[in-house]
Image 1 (cartoon, rainbow, N blue to C red):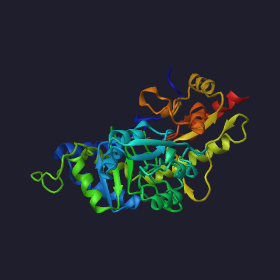
Image 2: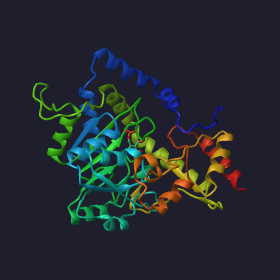
Image 3: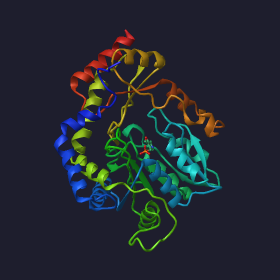
Image 4: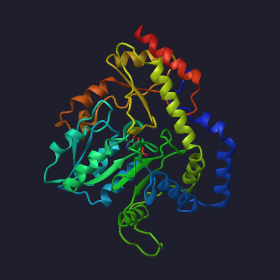
Length: 367
Ligand SMILES: Cc1ncc(COP(=O)(O)O)c(C=O)c1O
């Protein structure tokens, strides 16, 4: 069926900025600037300045950004790394790909790691924590960094969904030893394909990451500093992202406006748990707007058949995915959330009329 309101609408953004998109393509194609060129350098500078870190290293996905970070920090066999199961599989995958062991703790009802459960999960083998700022909402980073210091642990912030979000005035991505961002098309800042970034204040880590992403080469293609990977953010993507970055603050503002419309329109409905509200410590950017309902599957069927495209992230938590071998973890809140969540359309190009239509359609389910 043709949806009245799409979950994301890439062509709409292209139509709105067509001249600028086309100009970027024309510039890159006619200049032949494809790999590790000035647009990438400029984009890395922009992101480092925006996030508040010394370095930003463009890589080809958020997944690689996580893995290369974990590898650069030296996580390996025998090490344990603490994270959550209510996340995209790549967060846990990065730990496993390094040969380390993921230790999963539960989340709170704001969908982020329950900081009060971290210390109980620490053993003599624990080397790191990967907090995930889900849905554009920061984790409680002061407590996480305090625990990390106390036990000498490394922190990788998974900020794939949180460019622009902050905790107590400090941007997500500026707390950890490294932090990662994703420029997957549907993300806060998305390219026309895949893209990722690692941010860090540490000069040695930055150099390692630059070497890892380009087969061991940093300053010269003739000097190989180590074995690495081929995981560069393409110059064309960087140029597109730089162009789009000019609109980023405006887009964050619009997402926050849409969130307010949803908050007001969906308040006080029996059986619906609204998207978590934050206090003044948090600046949320609403990568996703997530409501909860015990009859989730019926609600989703109703929304889809009424023309509203929605997404469930994620219907089965990672420790319940048989193939991953993580079934020994007991995570009741994670399981409850997975059974109840549904993400509503949330992107800056949504019109007020579309938001109203989504609200009215959700309401009809509960009358
Ligand atoms: C929380 C989280 N971590 C990591 C990733 C991986 O990013 P990418 O899709 O760019 O590899 C994503 C993207 O879906 C994500 O949402």
